[in-house]
Length: 302
Image 1 (cartoon, helix red, strand yellow):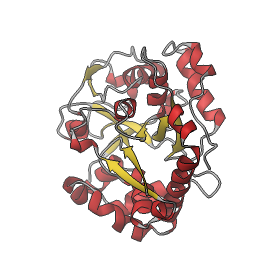
Image 2 (tube, rainbow, N blue to C red):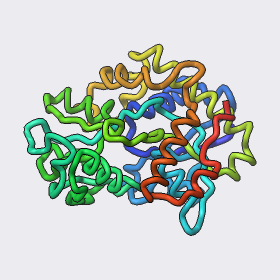
Image 3 (cartoon, one colour):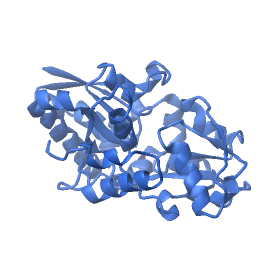
Image 4 (tube, rainbow, N blue to C red):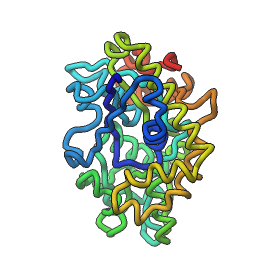
């Protein structure tokens, strides 16, 4: 068996379900693979998924596509390449509580935004405020990453960024009403999030092996889409005790599954979508034009 390690971007949730399904049902083992999952709780997110890949602690990492851009353009460049998109559409959004003063993005000027300090995140939020007619000056705070969602629920922040298919489902389950502000509604052609990525040199040295990983992972997501009750049973033991109690996993998968893609599109990335996001970053001065020429993703593994 060939062991491969993958770092999650968050505690286990529906975005990761295909990996756990492929692991549990032996899809990886059938191809001679043993996949070991690295959880962010192990170090309380002290080392990011991108950093774990850079340090060769893992073979693959999961994060938004912008992490791939970041790794390729830092001083000590890491040639990272995205190889699998977990979702075919952007299911993230900025949210505030329904009863708060934040009724639209421009209301965030002078208000507290709880940030994950992800690449471009703060700048994207500022651009969304400007697009809505505001100045683009929220008060940025950086709580503990794994507790950011609760800062909104507890009234310690006015807005934050969530996955609508996870925290959004939790809010609905708990009867918490949210106002949701989508990037696409504010002129931002956001890229893929999250994606699985690896180092280009590792990919070139292990192309057949990594192709088998992609094949089994795609099979896991397709199986989860078609066998949702069983997939939920597989994922449930991996959730944190908090998520086991607070999130309607069945509902979350119902929301997520249509965006895993079909037999043709699952895991794939459209060049037009990637290009639109790269162009937007360059046009707004967030990245140098060199990113337009970089090899940042591939659909060639299956």
